[in-house]
Length: 181
Length: 293
Image 1 (tube, each protein chain N blue to C red):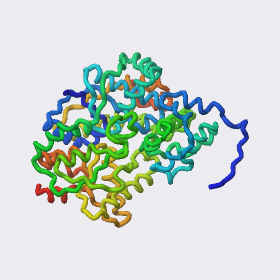
Image 2 (image 1 turned 60 degrees about the horizontal axis):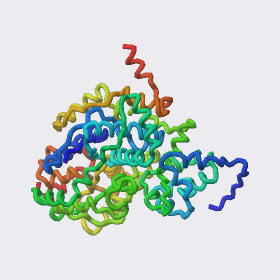
Image 3 (image 1 turned 45 degrees about the horizontal axis):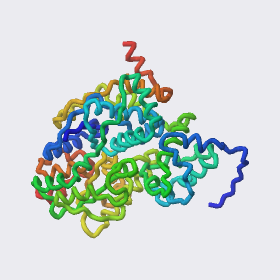
Image 4 (image 1 turned 135 degrees about the vertical axis):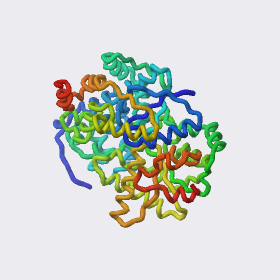
């Protein structure tokens, strides 16, 4: 574990800590005292290339590239034990979500997550609900005597996604085909 | 008290039997609802939040607006929905700038988020003292001699500064419900461990977490008859992976996983045939036998 790595101070991104801490929910980053409680209780601690407290330290030091290229930011199981136990109130799960946001903005969005956004965009739900799939779902619901689903107006979801900056991740080819009909 | 029922999407689209069980017990316990029309995915706290917190908060706020228009508090039946909607409510309350940003977008589709509706998980209502009394009084098939492993799941209780319900490391709400049903909630080391579903980019994590928990339950002195959860992600994760692990490792892991309302419905005398109990890899035949059903 004692690998030595020398990084020149000029290569640090000194504003990285503020880029994170100015965002809603992540202000707590600056309070970290590096006690390591987050890492000791982490569900996925044996799977990460950077322990939670080291992710935070790296953010504070300005090691932006190191943090964003780590697999640790994608490995979290969102159990929130780190956030729960932090004696300084650092919201690590939220900071991690923010780091994922930054990575996605820089073009490194995992295909599986992009696919989920696409599914929600196209169906309003996280489960495909069109054509034959919708017929099957409705039939199953009917068998249990459940009320008819009233799905959302998909245009509203589309506008929200566009306005909140994820429009570039969505493949709208399907919509265009619909319009051509 | 009446609530706006927020179903989410995994339960109504993929697990309608869970929704059926919930509606059955809600009817029996006189919980009343109005359906929310036009609700979307909460949206899911893993992918959507990871890609864009702003998108996550805004779509969630839109869903909350629908309940606000009805003038009702929201009742969720999935822990993922509970986490998303409750976090949105608290964050937007604590950060006026974020609320203003969300509303700027919502204005374009004719909505305004005010923050007037509270968000609840059904476990909160079912574990209140008067509800527990009610449960005891209407019990038809008490869970005598039934050992239940309770799985709280992460997003029902943590982070407590946001979800503000039960103890984050020593919760008791679900245990109280099991006891009211006449069953025994067994103590075990892995009780509060995560199911690993949300770490789905690396599936081996889920396999390891499921194997650890189910192996512990299987090796306990007392026979564990059933495990219950209150989140479709957790329930699906254990049910799917338990069988796969059995096959791979030769361990006999065969504890059925029920959504808590399913077990409640059984205890309330709802006919098992109606509940769709066969819709899972480990079917609860032994449990029903032990209950003489």
